Image 1 (cartoon, rainbow over the protein chains, first blue to last red):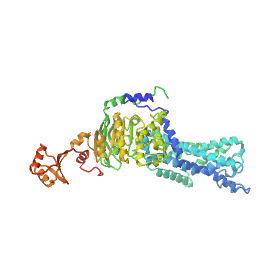
Image 2: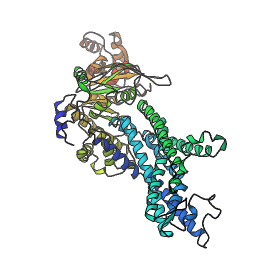
Image 3: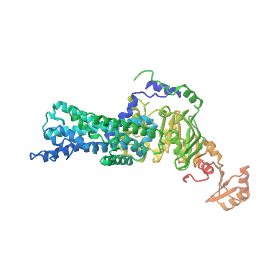
Image 4: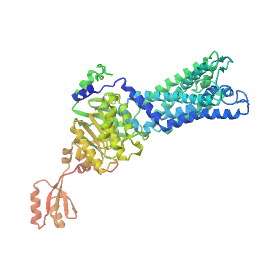
Length: 299
Length: 332
């Protein structure tokens, strides 16, 4: 500070306060705090935390007469639901499988869609840019914050499921899809790995949402468009005639995380999923950058 | 954190030379033009020069291109053609080096309603990578104090009145020592006491050597605080210069106060006074060339009882109307 003061006192044009590498992250800290203090963010996380509670209670009630859950075999209900009564840890996998198709990406769509457009809508974008936040820096900060939200949202689902599962059902060694036994500790490790893979599965829609967010000055429009795209892609992914296109839909390999519960782990679809997410992140991240760094800020 | 290598000479030597060459003008535009995608010409060939240390009033009816100009100066909008230099450096290319030295209030304040006033300022300060986080809280407190918001600093911004929001916006512009302040309608929404406070704040900042670029629709406000002014109409610069010169450009009006208004008007017309208007006990008109005392003599000789005789100095508003040919509140 003293150095900066002396330079400023010189009145020399070149003696600008210099940006410091560490100070650059002040915006990221501010962004994280601001995002997670919003009532809306907390409400989204609350809804996500409620899903495992509902699933857990439903399974508990249905099986209270001694029958097993998901009686019609694997075809009904989310994956792993039949095993929950034997081992509460399976509620983690069930809850992630239940929230990944819609609840998780929808909440990401809300946060990502609002990232730039919401600031433009409130007029705060122009003040951040004249601060000057820097357009590339602001966009990177927004993307990093959205990714942090992806991770936290997934961990909230997994954590809530783990607590509910431990309270309502027995815990212990578990049986993989391949039929082998693994210890509870290893099962926990796999659950954490699955949560990370699920969070990574959301980076594609996060980048897409951020791109949409740079196109409009209305936060609501950006959120609606992103969630609309999500629903459209999910529907198209169900139409058999489009199977040639489906491997390029960001949601196509989402449920491949179940392969982490095989022994040995079946990596093919997992790798395809992560590769596809990286592709989406690069393509729509670049598009968002190209758009945002050249855009006239009129809001 | 304290490594001595972190100096500010990032722009390189050529940038420094450029900066010194035009250090006398804080803002300088050449042929600055913005045509929006719809084909509408918002700003048309603007040549604006804001001298260092001035309090510069930027005038024009609504829709005359003031805000578009300010946005181009702040690097928010890319000009269609022409150049803009702020603090001697080209915009929008040098936003990273220029904007930390510029405080701005653009088209009213914009705040995060769910954050307190203090947290709003902390966030805006964190957005500036040249702002020292160790002094952030002190600087925020000082800025709040300067605009008289210390008592309301903990309140959520959505509960603020328009005047309080305006003050908080000003506080954000004052988080750092600035070389240039760009204030778009800074007294909007303030009560007369608040307006006075802002005016004295502007004078105080100007006396510290900060150049203030002030857009306002209140002409008397410009007249009270500004040393220089520019007038825009329909995207073009009508005139710019020192306020005293601008007002002098418009001719004053001859005012005769008399109970015998009818006779006075007749005599004045005979003496070659144009545009004679009678209002209650005053007769006004455009003064002719030559000695005004002869006019008074003629009035008295004709038996007109004269209570007052003189020329009223033209206000900036008269100058403005003369220049743009319209009232100030008319949208362009």
